[in-house]
Image 1: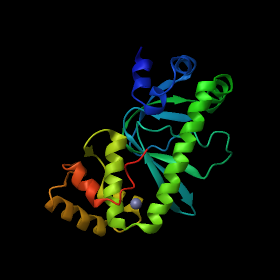
Image 2: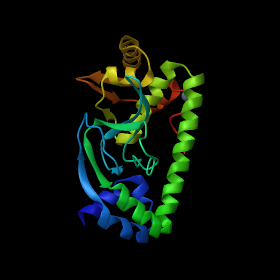
Image 3: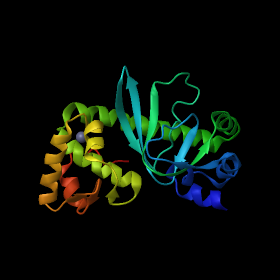
Image 4: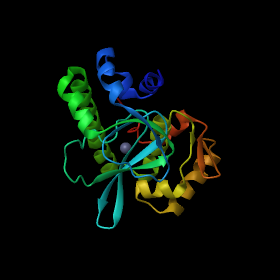
Length: 217
Ligand SMILES: [Zn+2]
């Protein structure tokens, strides 16, 4: 029963057919996601919290995306030996987790799970292509508004427990630059900032300041 509630809280799992859920549920384990934790192997289906995906290049950690209850972390890298990508918990929460071997086993036996895997990977590829274009062509200030809207979507709430330094790291700018943008958005009544948290007060206003790459399907 508890696991069924978890399944309904994660978008890729909630979209599965009852038969596919039937096959997956016995293999899923409920796990806590703790801020600062680097996720291990396997597939995580978060129901709350926020995860940053990153690429390690030399001694630099480059963020490649952000996911929450809308995502399935680690699903693209199944079977890839020594993937250079990792996932870091940015906001604590919870997830359903399945080991790589158990997921592969269910995947091999269940058409709906294979279909979910394919659709999810296609959607992620679309996101990555869109983000590559956005990073190359759109101003960092507009991308900051996108970043806030994306975090809002992943968390499913207006309160975003991320720091200005995390925003700067993910956008590849200085923290002082983020502070200037925050002050401007605060003055416009679009967001609030305090105690290491952003609060979105006017989503439509934020959308208008963004380059339009955050809301898509
Ligand atoms: Zn953009």
